[in-house]
Length: 289
Image 1 (cartoon, one colour):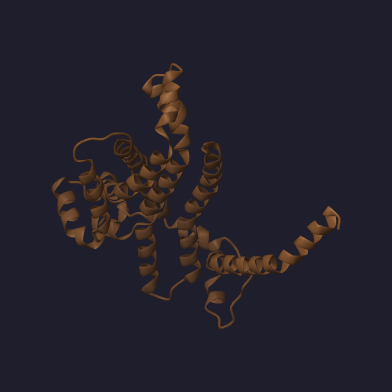
Image 2 (tube, rainbow, N blue to C red):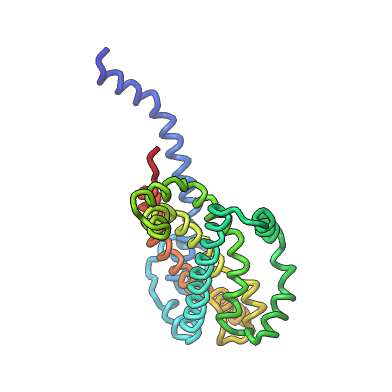
């Protein structure tokens, strides 16, 4: 039997399993993406169509009127600016603090190191709801209610422990021998770190940044407690207020779906941008033994 015939026979033997797995993957992908598609489809249709007994799965005759009405309300852009400011502040400071803590835990041996690690783990076990009263009183005492800094401080404190654990694994996965070899070649400790170790930690920083972004962007309960004035609402609070305003009369589901789409679009754009960075970082960060 020739080599080409053997290869063809092997492909024929594994083809049914691959077809089944591909079919399952397609079904899972469709089930995952259908709610997103339905939200976008509904945002393009008028409310009279959405409330009819027969659903319309394609946006024929649709328009951007719902989006225009939502943005024209004058409350979307302030809420968007509030969410962006809080999210950027949280991601930047969270990565800074967590990165330094992960380096200290992984690279140095100091008194109280194990206690610190256990404290980080213990903090993750505390229910967030049990801290609301204390957080509110603390922010009220500091005069940070209805402010970007007040919400960002709570978000940073809540996200840092988990990102420390994430980055700790990445830092521990980079051998310290690489830095020592660079120092033997003439680099200082800081040069060895930024030229050798830091590029290898890019995947961990991106993954931690994604986690911090999602936590800050989608968080609702803390913002509901700390941000009590309408002019300081984040997008989740704005969307809740938008639905409540619609509940006083017949709900305009087209505008509700349009508002939901506007909240989701920045997350989608962020993931489209970060996906390539994460993939390239994983490839660039590979260490050959």
